[in-house]
Image (tube, rainbow, N blue to C red):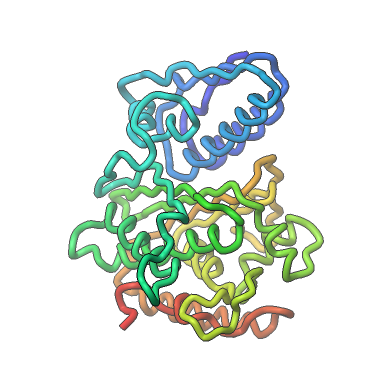
Length: 332
């Protein structure tokens, strides 16, 4: 059976593709056709890669054949996917490997962050410190100029909190990130892991009736499943990182999240998550970096509002950690 990839890797198209191929898991032979692909976005790219990895893994266990077509094109969007490390990420042996392309002032290719490489080698250093250094490096790939330091700082904070979330809550050793910026001033950050998902993570510390409830609760301030919530460390798990990142998207761009089989785009309070049969968690943040010069004030205001809201939420932590309060550059 021939399955065409979407013309554009938008959120909606990627979700539809993920749903479509999940119904073909028992099909005797499936050919994934990349010839129609014309344009890709970071979140859609990682979501489609995530869906293909999940799909092919299940078929491999059952000794079913899956192949690809059009992956050797040398022009257009497929050539970008080859350069970005997309095909190697889905275990198709063509193009560059993940982490091989250096990236540029407009994009960060598929980049695997491995917890083993974040293990501290020096006394007094914890792995969250190394996440911060890694996040700085990733942000400066697409905002390298000195006059872009505020935008790089804003993006580094988002990378840091999303990567921390994956490693501290998802029970995984690696996660994948991508990013891109446009002339409009917007930048998009995407992160994907194949961990236990928000529902199983939050259920350790909170009463959540369903994955739907868990996804909604996770975006509230002061909600954490980790145990080190009040040690006084800069990196206490106080449940404010994901809240801040989601609020940045809601106020200055867009935000969406897929976790525990639920896709959630909280543009309206009554929006219901869409079921998507995928494990792990994928997060998208698109943000207007033209507002980056106000970043310290933006962060301070969001945290203050979150702390006030957390006081009204049963079981929430009411004070953000030092790490969640401050971005990297102006940490003093």
